[in-house]
Length: 297
Image (tube, rainbow, N blue to C red; front, side, top):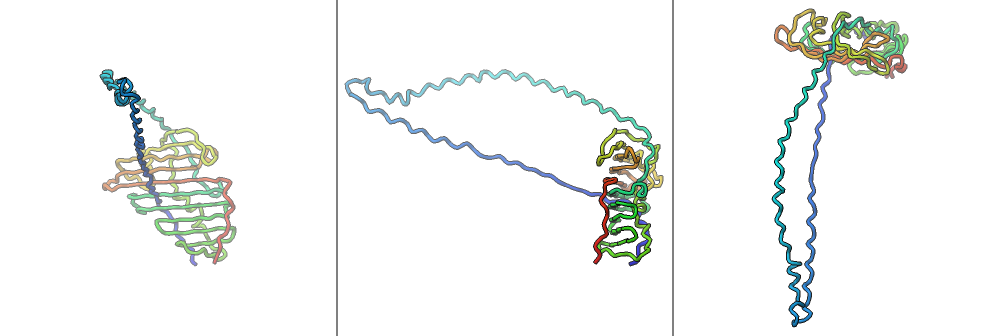
């Protein structure tokens, strides 16, 4: 099988998940109480003494005069419930912005052991046009990795195990490549080229320090307007109605992004809609299990 010799450079696919409906029901009425049997009227003891014949206890002790229901204790005039003075929620203090600083792109040679998932979706960006990309990389050593790529429907899977290489296309079975096959164009370094860069002078909010997959990271947020002004995929084209943010978590030790999450939209000069969404997750640095060769038919 002839190895493909083209780069996959494009922008990737978003997921849309919809969920959740819940319902509740009510029911059940109190059982009707069983009527109590009225006591049997006592037999008169003697006709001579009129008092002996109790008047059937005046129908069960002369039905008590229904006590006049109190005049509903003239329910106190409900004091006009005070109009809740809604304490004006304090205006959120805007987090000041400052240059995001230098970030080192992930170098698969400098960081030999890692797991990475990249999903990108782009529409209305011109150039390569609309695209969806889903890349997954597991690298346990610089010469031992497994890479899966879906580029707008074109699928590729590659294993590099020392001097051996295996390639599977479109979900087919993996095939061992001839000895000496150059797999440079299918290496993690090539696929990492799609990750967008952010110039050091880009203004961003500093949202503090967080822990990502056990590593300390600095959380930075870039507004859509700021990011789109220098986005390479727009080639300097002016856009309007920018919306959304791009969040970046930068490893405090390596200075490379551990996470990138963003959903940016805008309007192009011709009135068409533009969108760029990214979900980048770098994990298991130094703890990715050793990659094994696939079973070959």
